[in-house]
Length: 83
Image 1 (tube, one colour):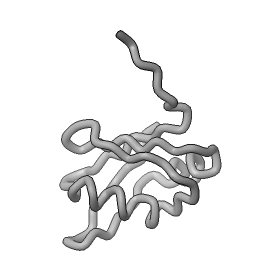
Image 2 (cartoon, rainbow, N blue to C red):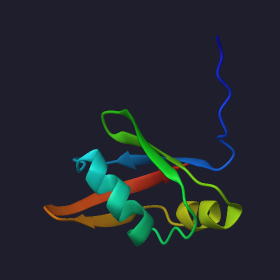
Image 3 (cartoon, helix red, strand yellow):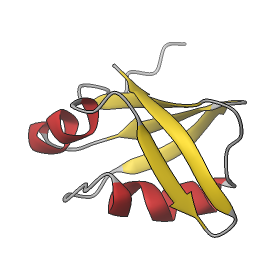
């Protein structure tokens, strides 16, 4: 069975070396990537998270930078947005 999901404005966040806990990712990505509308952030596999945005403005905002250095409570993490 194939489940069709709304992935029009989906971005994969690839963490380079280490990554924070998923709850921490859900808190810091919208703030530090300046996402304005609600979206969903989930886990894909080891270093990858799925960021499902709801509007084009946020999609352009997130994909416009080659990398983000996210500050979590235990350090900095590099995340590359992939289309």
